[in-house]
Amino acid sequence: MQQASHPTLILGGGFAGLFTALHLSQQNYSHPIILIEQRDRFSFKPLLYELLSGELHSEQVYPRYKELLAGSNVTFVQDTVQSIDLHQRQVGVGVGNLFNYNNLVLALGSKTTYLNTPGAAEYAMAFTSGEQAIALRKHLRHRLHQAIQTQDSARRRLLLTVAIIGAGPAGIELACTLADLLPIWYDELGGDANEIRVMLVNRSKEILKGDVNSHLRCTAQRALKGRVIPVDFLFDVTVTQIQANGVEYRQHDQTQFLPAGTIAWTAGTAANPLLMELPVPNHQGRLLVTPTLQLPNFPEVFAAGDCATDSDNPQPPTAQVAYQQGIAIAQNLQRLQESKPGIPVQVQMRGTLMKLGLNESVANLFNKVQIKGQPGHYIREATYLQLLPNAAHNRKVTTEWLTDEIFQRDRPFTHMQLGQTPWLSGIATVAAGFILATPLAWRAAQPTQFQQNLSWTGIPTLLNHLTPPTR
Image (cartoon, rainbow, N blue to C red; front, top):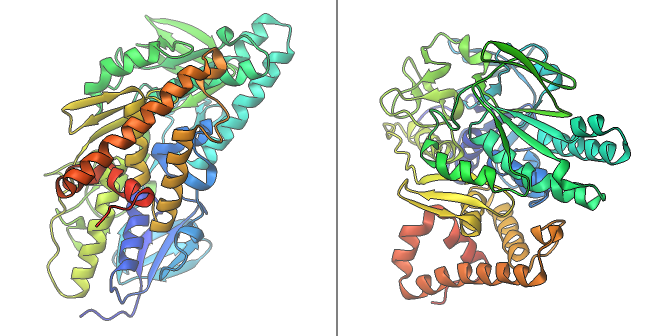
């Protein structure tokens, strides 16, 4: 057994770091556990679009760490990591404060990179945290209020134009969400929704280039064009400057300018600079780790999530990967404490999920079957809500969500506000009931097969919260 003279430090409170901490706390782990994170709230990144739109509430997808960790034996320290000394086993935070560690988990994630684009950091809005989602919502609301009050058509056109830089998954999901949401908000103010313009600006000629979701390209393109306000494309361009009132870009050797009152940046991320200073190898900014997620020359240190990769078994930097890695690190830390060898991490990729508008998604199950539209929406949210940290928080949020979905309770918007009838809303409720009834019947008939085949989606847990299985 190792001596617990120093704690296990976990740097970063994203999926990998937080789930490592929570699962360590649930085990018979004797070392003190300290989670260090500069923010006071956990940002559930896949559901930030729902936070922006109001489909889910702040306390559901942007909860405080102290609430999530209540009742655990994890000590939460809100501070900024300033230095990491692997040889001395020390981490510096704040102004001169040092933590010694017995084991270290590096889960600092990545940071938004503006690719050295002048003006981007000053005028473009990033979208990677709950705080940024709330700021973007406030900004957009303000722009709409300004637009409804101006008689200057050119000024109004600028205020009602949103430019989204980057056509990866984040850019597409944000574009689809805003192209449905902004017309509803503007219609509520008495404005003409047809004046709104959402532009997707991309360096490449195609969306999702090189991404794990690239096989969803055709589905995403159709969705972008099928929104309340169709999304416009500005592709094969190089953004040369971001200004307060628009985007300067080069296309076909000509410099042009896109006036825009809102500029959102989803064009890329970069490794945390602290990690690049460590005396360990990395691949394109991600630390190289062993199959057990340990640093080769520092076996007491684990790394996961956006900031690490196993070159023999690389995984995409997604929430489902980081979630599984966090659980695996907790198990290997426990084995390390018991002087047992670590177990190679086996990440199970279960497909991909993309939000393609309000109440619409695509669930690409095991990269074989695509479930689109509202059924895809239910699968996407049930899957992600299953990943919510803390069992009590998970149970509360999933119950609230399904109740709201079926009974359309507490929804500040629906497509009905743009001309649809209560009959169509009833169809949505029937569809929701069908989606719920089908797995209930399967669970009753074949409970073992049901659990084995759908456990990854979160549906069994969600149904157990609402309708416990009969014995």
